[in-house]
Length: 310
Image (cartoon, rainbow, N blue to C red; front, side):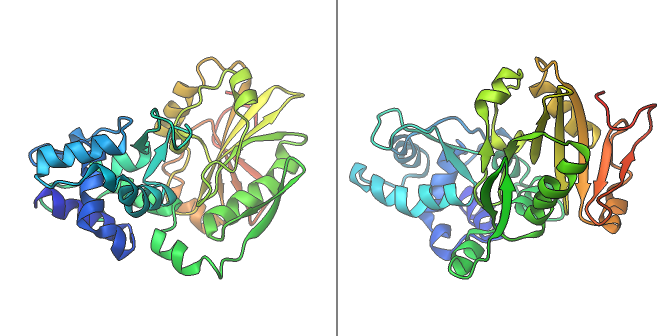
């Protein structure tokens, strides 16, 4: 399968609107991933890139010429929708800055790298794609439901926020409103994402003071709480379909928190016991389980203590 068709199939599979499956958008995605016609998908990269660099890459490697004054077209048709759909991110510079850049998010890069060159990206076989789709609503759905969307109100650090609808955010709301008061009383929420607004709460200053290395949002646990009186951090994963606190996830978080001296608690949260049972064999030892249907109880996986730092 040629790269252009591969990119088109991927954009279709994540349910991007038809306009964002155009040749321009497919070529933009290939350029941002640095995928030439003969470059294997597993060699895809996500370096920071300008729209000018995208135009040059497309011309040099796919023979399609776009004028420099078409940059606004790239911005509106590809960059803005891609960013809304969590495929790419920008570097936070002013949009008129010569240093303004985009790059593919780490989690979507893994989706691209895991694609089968011959068969494309089949959901059941591409675990990275399944994980991505579980955490991000499709852009088509976002556009279709934008006017009808019912937000879920939630109070975080005594401030009012609203989560977008969905099981993942329903569970995150329960973690903040039900889990935290019971098992992390007096804690402050340092990080929580939303399936649409990925970094709803992100206290970079406090995370940095604690020694946390701030990296791409997709590597962050779903909810991070800090309890000052015990000097404990709670890393909580909200699991509805994929992504529990398995040994691999523990290693990823440990790599980001090597300088953190606070006690670390690893918690996997589930909406119900049935979902917990599906993932019970994947969970790492010495971690905690909380089930929203039974909010007053916790499950500790082995060890001689309950809910204490490792």
